[in-house]
Length: 399
Image 1 (cartoon, rainbow, N blue to C red):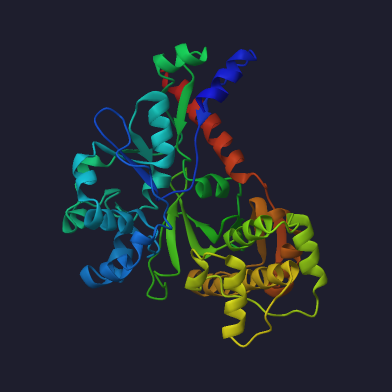
Image 2: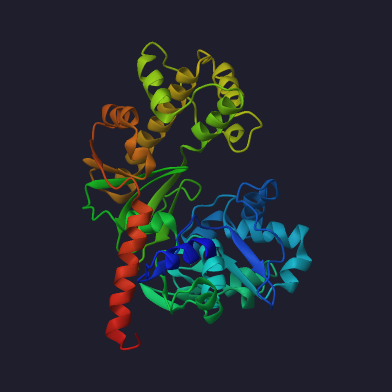
């Protein structure tokens, strides 16, 4: 980032603002000097295994869901912190701040250790009713809330580029914004959908859901399948989090190592042409979380479920895409029942929106009209948030 900022200055450009978005839940622990205590871990880290079961036994998933509104998965920040408390307690004791990935990068740019609602609301550390970190919940697991950052709401200019980086890069006091730090929140903010429209953010994960003004809790909601996340404007998304293109991307890594051509275009076309191949996977199956060889995992799943085993990359791709579509169909039906609305349109955003064959399968199997939104929806949502933050800043008289 510093290199890019230097290059921007060298080309005579002056950014109006800098906004950062990324995936949520992962974090870095920094000491009083602003240095990382360890390299941030991925939410797929094996240390998180069994943490949902621990939560179920100690607090109960229903109560936890009523507090946080977050889907109960082992990837959440709460699950990661409980695992860290067990395995690396000294790091937590020495931490001055816990910062989510966008917060950490912003901190290094401007020195302000803060977060925003879109990230806090996904962590399972945030209490929806109290609108703050859940101190009671965290105290049960002996996690100190002092390390958690201040939460900002709405599109905000957090600070300006630090004086050190201004000198290093040759840029002036560029405003650093917050408000849409979670990439899914940024992406969903580009779609102004009515009650008959469901949104699918199609990327590493398939985030399928609807906009809501306030969370509504119902006994029909399965907290292991659905949850609420915050939008930049303070509203919410009701979401089903479905493992997405991660599975196909991991297959592509295997094929690349083997020297097999595997562009998205060629794989999609091969899958489309494999019309007599009707096997499909369940993307939620545990074997697809972090296997050594994803192509073997797909074949093993089909073999064990009594389906025809895919051999070619096209057949494997078709099995993955069909499995994703089956998950979308199920989730849409559940959303219609829980939220008591009829879904007639599905707007796809993110990189997966470019996959014409997947779009065709979705329309064919769901019976709803498929619309295409921004492929780079997170980027567009980030820019929209920056513009609003600058507008708010100007209106405050602080700029």
